[in-house]
Length: 114
Image (cartoon, rainbow, N blue to C red; front, side):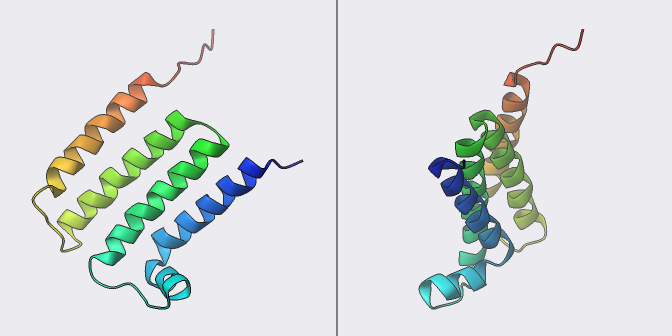
């Protein structure tokens, strides 16, 4: 039997994927207006966060935070290099998420294969 939490987690993951892939369409169907400009990358970061939230509720909080941090690191770097966005805190945020990703990776439980 599927738990209510599993259903909610799946719904958040699906919504997050939609925001990450087609943010303007999600804005159109939810708010009646498509997203433009800086709202698109903002919606994508929110989508990434919803995916991580869904994973945290469904499986593992450490795994979810690692996925979120790695994905946001690469997405923010992409925005800075090729996406045409570059606020004053963009690169410090990339560096912070990259460092956090390394720390999260190093803190994961080690499996014993002996």
